[in-house]
Amino acid sequence: MTIWRPNLSLLPVLIILSCLSFTHTPALSASFEEEATEFVQNLAEMAIRDLTDKSTPRTQRIERFRTYFNEHFAVSGIGKWILGRHWRKASEAERSEYLILFEDLMVVSYVDRFAAYVGEPLHIHKALIQDENNITVFSEIHQKEGSTAVRVDWRVARKDGLFKVVDVVVEGTSMSNTLRSDFGSIIRQRGGKIAGLLEALREKTASLRKDDG
Image 1 (cartoon, one colour):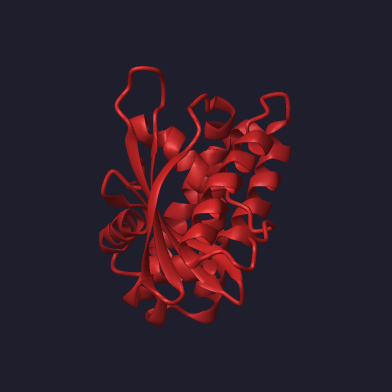
Image 2 (tube, rainbow, N blue to C red):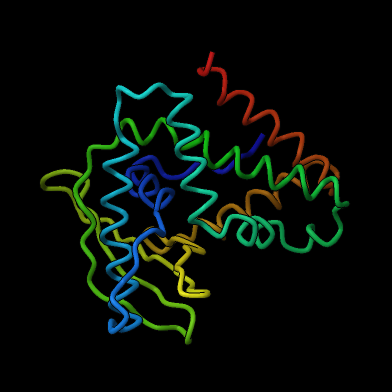
């Protein structure tokens, strides 16, 4: 079964992207670029602090991560976009199960990476406005002393004064595009049916959850 497997050298970076918070309220006078930059910088640091405690039981870390992911990522929108044209063909029951399994895959896949994180803080270089509600924040992370910096571009959307991450691009590779390609490949391999992807996601999340017991 083919399920998205990120480049292992980039895992510390991908860990950070999965745990931003939206409780921060920037100063009203700040520009869009300043708000987005402060949002990414401060809350990536908070996520690292709150979600990398090795003494916290794994099940508790999973649920903590699930809360961050659901509240602070555009989970439903990302999941629908990743499924692409197959979303339109799926039944209501298939759509509902897919979104649950998509969330589970992301949460359970990364929870153990948090505990292993030992990287350096995020270094933001600039923010580029795409339109009045979308902006990209460009950053780098040095995973260890002397290592080459890893480029991480954060695509952030603003709605009703809140920011949500809609994609993260690591060294030019989009998380959403990678998942879209992998999920599409699974569907093709399993008879072109969304049911084939659901089966694969059930299998993968079940195997990842074995350590919970």
